[in-house]
Image 1: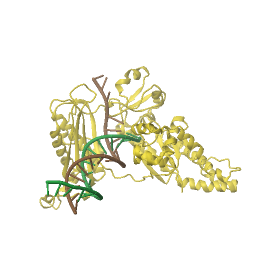
Image 2 (image 1 turned 120 degrees about the vertical axis):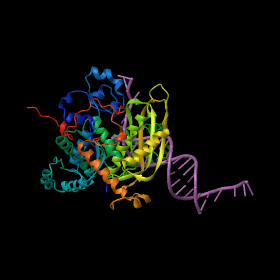
Image 3 (image 1 turned 180 degrees about the vertical axis):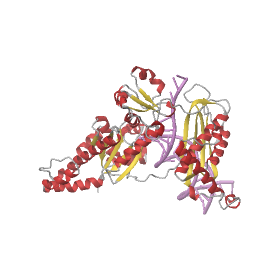
Image 4 (image 1 turned 90 degrees about the vertical axis):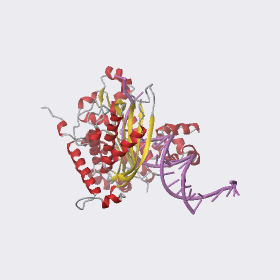
Length: 471
DNA sequence: TCTGGGGTCCTAGGACCC
DNA sequence: TCTGGGGTCCTAGGACCC
């Protein structure tokens, strides 16, 4: 059976989130910055028109910001994460199967819906009046069905899918205040293309489930705008004369394989309507986790770096515990500011842990050891990262002999005591704000802490910061 | 002065084993 | 001393995504 996917994507998500609780922003250009207030990661249409591109550092557009009174925000992930959840919950009403693809995107499987449309369509041909009550009950627009021929059924379904998309869009806007765009097609890659067109054209919903619209869409899509084809692959494809999605679809598979590998072949098939990427309804188990951040101020001393690495290790191990995982390998990397004209240094070290762990003191200990091994005196460091890999389920960790025989009192072994301690810390930090309880190794001054000078309130997740309604 | 962060997957090459 | 090939596993690096 032919599948039908809808990709629902929030428009300028971070900016839209800021606007939900601050309606005055509706008439102003708005941008949201990355961590450390470094560069632009989300912008509204008006900011776009002013020529602001994603990724541009804030200092380069300072004059523009002043001249046009652009509203500037630091990232407020507590707010965005919460609104994202509301959008996703709303979407679950519209499809039996759904994949949350990122903080602002979800794929829906509309196949179930369309097959019932299919039956409706057949009924509509046979006796138009019989389906009307059902359609009215489901609040769907009444299609013009008079004289519909069988070959027109797919067109009819596309039409219905479009109306369904409209309904999703209106509902999400009403329930959450977030505007979305929707692309509908028979594979995920095509749904992405449709979604892009919905955004560019401002139509909100675009369905390319039927042949004519599909061909036009592909002809107007450049290869670098295809999902999974980035700048480098696009360059390679253009070199062999493939410029548009339509040309890629009709290209020789073997040639594409040679040029950009297996990913390219999948793209070709998906463009042909052969689905290679299915809906992943359950979140897959993570392969690793990393905390890699830029400092607010450059850091020279080993003492301060140790505090930073201890802080990052605590964050990373908390993530592991949340997912009930333990890491068996750790990589610490340290780099200077590549944009500055000063001595450069970059190094990293990978440590195999004797026992997989998610216990903060263990990981901190190894992280500091690793840091000491790669640290060099005389540089101004700008970035530090810790990456944990070789993840295994925490309850299957191979413990060492001491854990069993040396465990002192009670019958509680060392591992259990460690787990209990972490649970207490995590609970306190969840309820009273992250960082309420932390290890001394993390320090208290944190001069390296990232900047966040323009953060809005955590309207939905913090009692002290609820929006206030004025009479 | 000020240039993000957190992921996934694929591939090539080396080490090691039989 | 010379002489091979094929398989697996691991890792680093590159490409991509949002």
